[in-house]
Structure formats: structure tokens, C-alpha cells
Length: 122
Image (cartoon, rainbow, N blue to C red; front, side, top):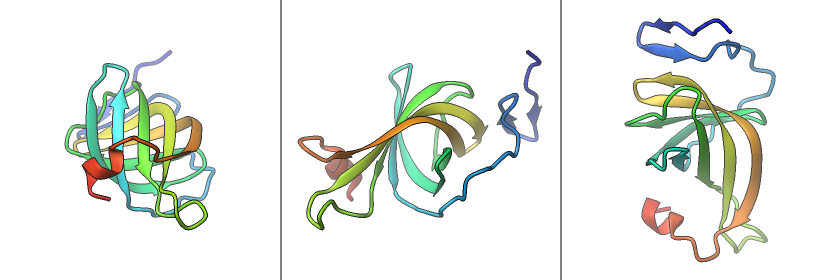
């Protein structure tokens, strides 16, 4: 497999060029990113589609790394219960203050006893 090149401070995974096949929705929500190394970072989503999500963060995860993103979802279940969107995927683009993740799996979960919303102020 050919190696990726670093161009003007941006990194792009091989085979993940501009191939957006899903409509992107500009949704700005708090996101928590946990990497396979155990590092946790917080940021804001920029846009989300059925195949990927881009977000801003001060210390983006490493290109090619598997991550779990937890997004504080803007709509409540039955108008009452907070939801979070949990996304599993791989980092396919990394820039100085942002990253993009190709989604491999996703699910909605209820907030339950998790403290994510309290930590992020949502």
C-alpha cells in the first residue's frame, strides 16, 4: 500500500480522498473522543453524515487510529430523555485543530448514569 503524504500541514489517509457520498449536516455539538491509546479529548462537531463526522479539538487523534466519539445529541427521546450518539470509526483526516472520522458503527444510547453531559456543560 502506498504511503500517505503530508501536504501543507494536513494529513490524509490513503484511499480516503474527497469521496463524500452522504449528505453532510452541519451540526455543532459537544463531542468526546476516546482513542485506542486511552487518550480522551473534547471538542465540537462540525458536520455529520451517515458515513463520517468531522470535529474540532485542540489535540486531534492520530491518523488511522480507531476512536470512539460520543456526541451529545440535540433531540431528547420522547421529549424527556437525553441521548448520546456513540460512533466507532477510524481517523481518515487530521489537521492542526480538527479531524474527520469514517464511521464503522454507531448507536444511540440514553444518558443513564454517565456524566458526559455534566462534564461538557450540555
